Image 1 (cartoon, rainbow, N blue to C red):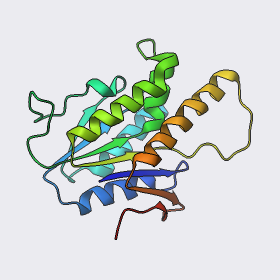
Image 2: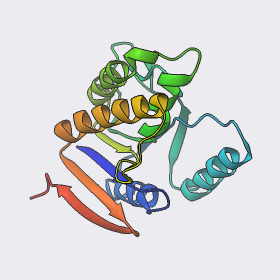
Image 3: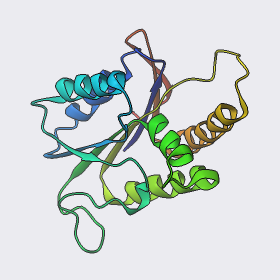
Length: 183
């Protein structure tokens, strides 16, 4: 299963995504953390997310760039997970920013780099849950760099939504099913 969870800041999307992962009851739960910490606010956010998933059986794998070359713990030399595996990637918005703006990022090739990474990750796990941000509704025109970031994130989000079995937008803590693969 591939689940894409989106929502605004503070919407409850992370909690919803974690709850859905826990419902799967898989032994191997990997949390791919994509946030680079640059300031106290980001350090606090990472600490809050770690506290949220404490005791839930997640093994955290930090991956700020180059998702396509990620090797999961327990992955065979052939690139396949050895046991049933569920991956929660949090958050696509951070990964896109990292790829675009970090010195070692893929810059102008960020969208294609990330799409390739998602495809490879889908081949490695039984279940993939990706959290992303809905940041496109404010109607504001930003500086050219931010507009390019929005374009890249939008392209990646659309790509994932087409591939996903289920797409859920969380608004005020309430899940709204946009695409359902459930019977």
